[in-house]
Figure 1 (spheres, rainbow, N blue to C red):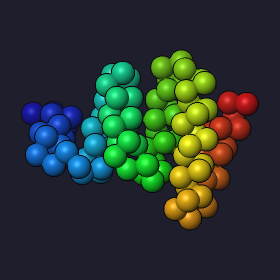
Figure 2: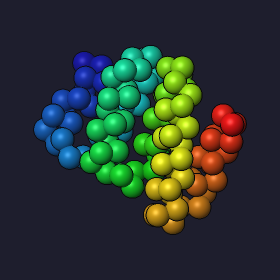
Figure 3: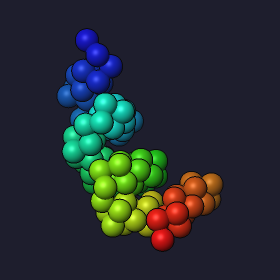
Figure 4: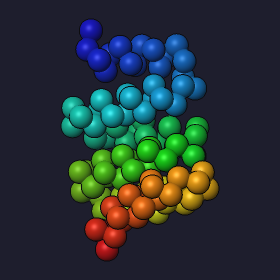
Length: 102
């Protein structure tokens, strides 16, 4: 059983576990299954709008998929989430990714 399959099995048992959902999204992204990755990132951020790393990685995945406008929007939302949660380092890092697309 692959790592992705293991994570999907665990996520099916605990669908509210944001860390598991992030792991599934990352495994899809690593496998270049970008639509699946983006779907998992979207569900993750819907369930936990303060999961800052989700915005950053979803933005990077949108960049890989060639949708710069969607990437910018995710980065903007990520900066807002990072500020909301007091994560100044993440806000700066995501802000740098956004600036690189301007």
